[in-house]
Length: 184
Image (cartoon, rainbow, N blue to C red):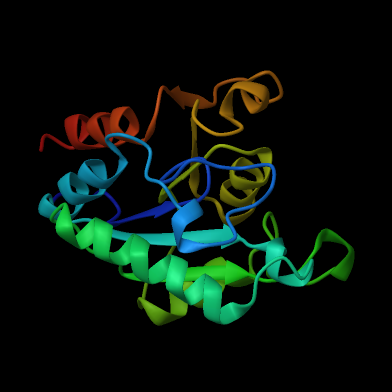
């Protein structure tokens, strides 16, 4: 592979799967956005590692427990693998915004953990694909490359996104562009 970063970091809700204002509380609630699983598989086939970094305040709010979140993630992992992809890690913040933790995006504790776990020397230029300002702010705080998708909360976020933000219709379009720019 060329000099591009070998990892892509994804938000979960609104990027890989449909989001819900009522929270994704059960495995049944988790439904992939068309094309997202195949996009992850294409990235993996091109040699990228793909990881998920997600705020999951539903745990802190008492709407679901860690065991249920584990079942949701097991469904997601199985769906990604069925499509031919692989997730190199899933990192989540279980806290509410009021908890003032270091792991809730846009704070960077989850990214630092991912960086250590995957032995990444830098996050500079690493694509962070999300649908919320917290995702773009996380990328900026880490020196990474924030990409906005117009699924989930993306249409509302686009109006607030910094000038020059790369905006894509969905994860499939963002993945295709990353693969194109790297000649894959």
